[in-house]
Image 1 (spheres, rainbow, N blue to C red):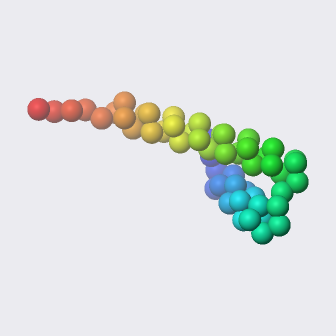
Image 2 (cartoon, rainbow, N blue to C red):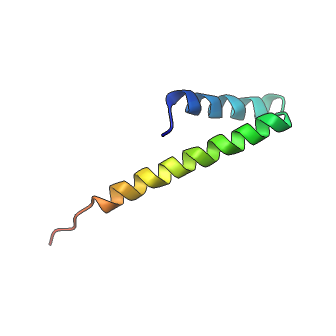
Length: 56
């Protein structure tokens, strides 16, 4: 599950990357956080689609 703190850290790293660049450790952390975020997003979206019921 993605927490607000994780999203804040993703945004913080993105802003830092634009301003001054990231270290190799920060780049790795950013990649891991983005991967976790995308996995959670896809799982939530799939769950929403699975709950849709089409009625004629």
